[in-house]
Length: 152
Image (cartoon, rainbow, N blue to C red; front, side):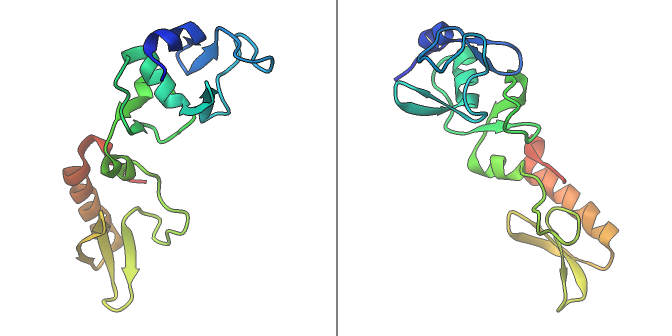
């Protein structure tokens, strides 16, 4: 098990992420960026870089789930990291690539011939215009997800 003291011995924090202070192997260069963008192996255990940054700043306990505010998992700036539940983390995801409406949580319901709005798989309602659907989804998502809401 690693702790804050050991992490600070191994790494420096440069504002964006961590750099090596001490080489753990002959492949590690002092001053280089830690890990393969998402993970680093310490004592034969794989750790997420975001967890290393969190431990470096706050010590233990490291949250089970750390959310990246901007949605960029490679941006491990401490200002971009926050503790989250699975639901909060999912609320902060980007729009799915197979989305056809162009808006998160909104799809065309052919049977009703209206736009269907959903938040957390819960149907909020059906709307005649896309603009009405967007406004309804925005309001519901902000009420349900608060600071974790991502609209696109």
